Length: 228
Ligand SMILES: C[S@@+](CC[C@H](N)C(=O)[O-])C[C@H]1O[C@@H](n2cnc3c(N)ncnc32)[C@H](O)[C@@H]1O
Image (cartoon, rainbow, N blue to C red; front, side, top):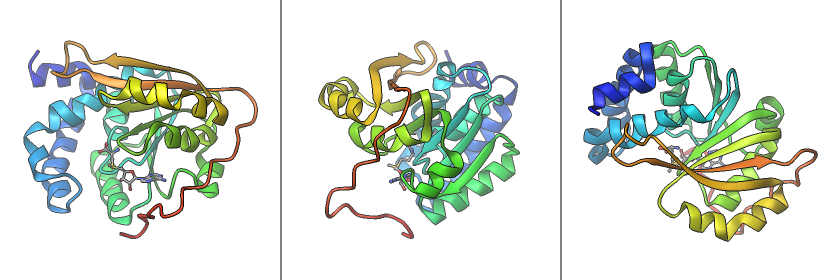
């Protein structure tokens, strides 16, 4: 399937917004240092479509929190592909949230909210927690992601962590740690076969009902990125 056929398949009658997002990534995101220039020729396959294909994993009208959106991945392609979802992009760095707010405004994505903050911040959890699903891509190792995702999810909510070829290894390594935090049923699945050259690998998890334990403190020496 060609890129334009795949884009039409994934984004339907909102494909023009996906094209608009591509143009923001190829131009402003590269000049502002949010996307490496080497990514520009492969934005569709490796980024926009690769993220858009996860849309099939969500039920109708879900509230989704995307942790560490960076330049909007996967949250913006997801929100374009699924206008019924309400997507909150959580990102600590000002120049990234500035970019995200500009893109959301320019593309008229009224189902997207941009929040500057860290996923584990109490104010973020208080205002945007109890989500049906929490997404992430390239943000942190799986055990830390479980710790950040669980407090943002409603009981029985879903974690959708986009991971690469090491997904199963991460699940094997962190399954018991994630269970201790309150995330069970970790499984690795793929989406996008026939649409993207390399299928998208995702770790799915489910938040157990009831209370979750507080997020473990970051190890000493963990660098804070706020304000960079
Ligand atoms: C490698 S980038 C990935 C960006 C995007 N998800 C993608 O796939 O292109 C990791 C992002 O996570 C953000 N981040 C780091 N720690 C975070 C935290 N505690 N809460 C939310 N976002 C965080 C960073 O600011 C950065 O934008």
